[in-house]
Image (cartoon, rainbow, N blue to C red):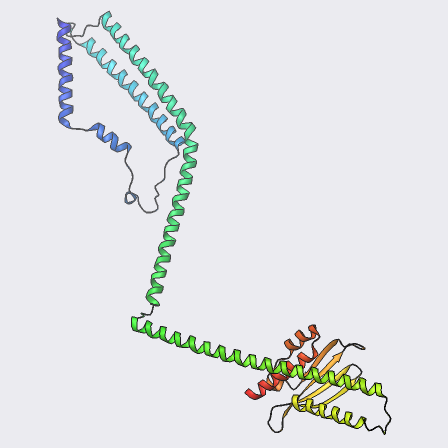
Length: 355
């Protein structure tokens, strides 16, 4: 009966404690969850402080130290509680002292065994968790470093993008685009069409002039070739006849040759031609109809004992702003003497007429 009364007292005390706990509204579970998921804000740190995650090894060391301290504290609490109960049981009356029976000791031993088993399972689980933490912490640290570097790079790139946008905005404000209205665009289109038409007309005119000059050069070259053939035929005829000095047939042939040479000189404006050496022929031409006429000279240098052109020297073309280097180089490779002379004279006459 006394044992039942004592248990009722304990039950009443436990009920009162539960009522006080519920009435106090401590919300320990909520506070534990908030504490575990709490994230620090930047404004909670002073100047010069940085938010850095702790190393898992350091955290494990701190937790082990705290667990050791709590175990000592728990042992001291149990020791003091046992001493207190022991003292109270000694100094109190026998009737009021709590009676501890063998059954109570067995029940306490059973409870202790159950708690020890649970504690062992919990320790094994904790050891497994700690082992997993030690195994995964290096990988987590590597991933954390990579994420940190990627975050820093992203922050830097975002800052660069922002700076570039600000610079572009300043440039746009400093150099605004000119506003082009529809009438201005139409007028610009009309001007461009007129300019294109003018350029097309100029191109056609230049093509016609070029064609006329080419025809003139071609006709002159053909005439020169005909005269050259006639000259060669005349020389062969004179050598074959071997006429006497008093032969009357030589006079008409000489007159014809002289007339042909005069015609050639008048057509091409040839004023002088003479052989400087065995392989060099110098030709002097009159350019233009002005008085006095501009004279140019062309010196043809051949390979000795051949008809291959070795070099060409020009004089007087620079006064007419005629560049002869490219023309001489191209015709020198083709060994085209007649074409070179005709082209140089046509360029010189065209420059003299446009001056």
